[in-house]
Image (tube, rainbow, N blue to C red; front, top):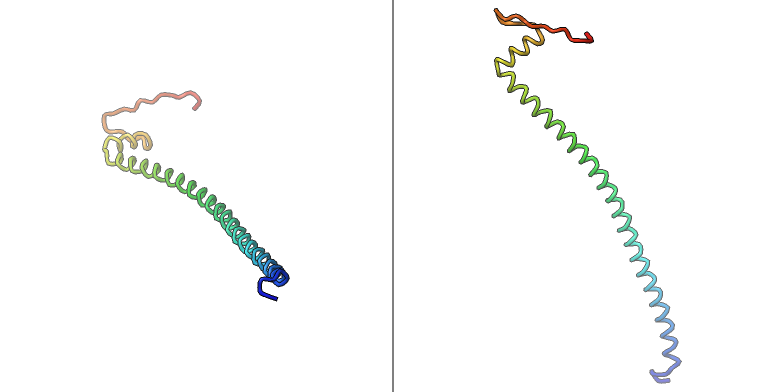
Length: 111
């Protein structure tokens, strides 16, 4: 038989066709496993990012409230440097009045 005979060609073709199918199946399996792993990693990281974003939003809100409180306290401290404000606090909380000043008290309903 010569090398171009039909019989010999069919037997090699069947063997190479089976090997090609096997290689194709292995390749598809490897690609499918890779995409499965990539999808799992993507969704796991998406969930982690969502949790971290929620924590960040809470911390930003907390930071804003702390900053507002700090600004209020700074304002109160700056007012404590004013003698007139100190006098108002002394009158209000401790009923302390300067000499010659008489307090005017009004009766409030319900007390």
